[in-house]
Image 1 (spheres, rainbow, N blue to C red):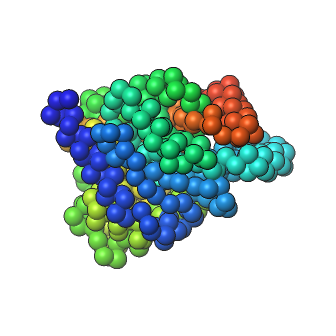
Image 2: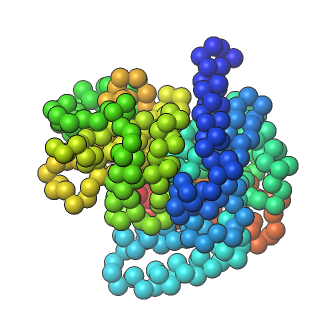
Length: 371
């Protein structure tokens, strides 16, 4: 292992331990109001990873830890968003039936490795046998749970996915994410991105990472909720002021925003970094403000600026597909890998059905509607 790889592994483990200091033994709902789970650490012999452990008893859990919410309630919401109005009633009825079936199969009795309670989990570089060692460790500690690895895509994680398939994991597509490579080059070629970067440079009241603290944390949680909970979906994690404060102070979250004339934050982007990739699990703005202010454009511009300065790639997650494509985002299907060969037949059947349905029907729909 070369020196750079060793440093990357050490940094990944340091971040995992920072996560553990915040989350292990803590009340999850004090940090994410609609999430009932608990956290531990596991290692592959070289690196430590956070793990979420769920027993399948929680109701209406946020989708970042609940497969039942991901493929039940959240999928139903997405179907309703794009389907004709006349199909609303049958889609809701089908969604309720699907939820009951998934609950009966105990699909939420799950251990998710490398789960940071975020929409997008970033992975370290694959090492030979690391997925096998993680699986063995998880089966020894939680023998009655399915083992999940979320947020895998073939552009970034082909080796991870190949090993998981060899080990007998099922692959279940979840959504389409947008990846940005060589952002500096994109900024030279993409007119929309150039406009966004100029807009950000001209904005006079920028709040950099070191300028944010105190009362800002409550405002950030509110801005995030205005967008992700009120406008998008109640299935999203409802991050609290305590979460934002703890993650920022631990160095897990870098914050960029812009203030109004009174000094109050109008918008915020929270960046999470692993290795050479950035993602933005926290994005929020006051949705009552006029669209001409371009608050979402300002926020994404700050993340593009970070990537240009560091040479890092960006995983901008799902949603706002047209916006991201215009700025050079490349679509990639994201998968969850799940191992359940040791579990009861009804659980295996449910997961097998989900894998087949989402791969044969879900992926074409994701690509068609750019979900």
